[in-house]
Amino acid sequence: MNSKQVRKYELIIAIAAMQSSDTAIPTSLAELCAIDFETAFEMWEFILARHTPPTTSPENIITKPFTMFLRISEMKTRQLFCESLPLQKLVYGTTAAGEREPCISFLTNLILGGKIEIADECLTKLRTNPQINFNETMRIIVDDIFKTYCARHNVKVPVINRKQKMLLLSHIEKVRGPNKALLTQRLKEL
Image (cartoon, rainbow, N blue to C red; front, side):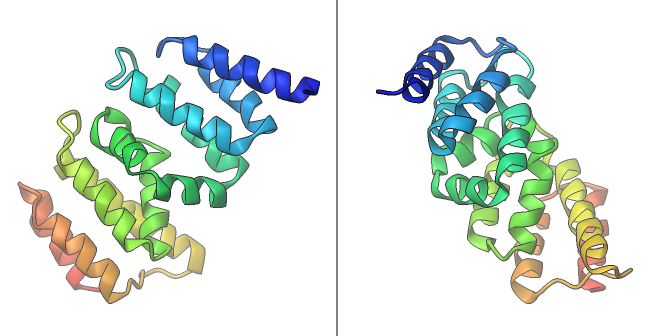
């Protein structure tokens, strides 16, 4: 066993012993990620499962690690995230982090990237999450989709395909209050 492998197992043991409030979680996951991306991702899922709902702010165990994984490899992160239904539930269904960055932009990229089934699962989990205001979160998601599309394609009016529109409308239907009419109208104008 070489020193890199020894360090990998030391980090796994250290991360497994950490509490959700431990500020070393993101740093330790980043170090483990430099050694083995998939193992770091699995440890992130382990920590989330062990400490959900987090007793403190979800930044330490959700938003900071998620941002780090996306920064290192968005493609690998998307692949591993899409393969893990428990992780989707932990991130979008049980904590307040689902209505924050990078969770919103990740969901936007799933929708714009054609990962409709996974996006539908995440939106369903957001809708049933007791810690967030789904009505407001749905407005933020639609705004982010429009803004991201326009920025990527250098246009003023976004274009979304039928599947994307149907996905969004099906979840907007479950919104209560003034956002429902506003969001429905915005999508129907496209």
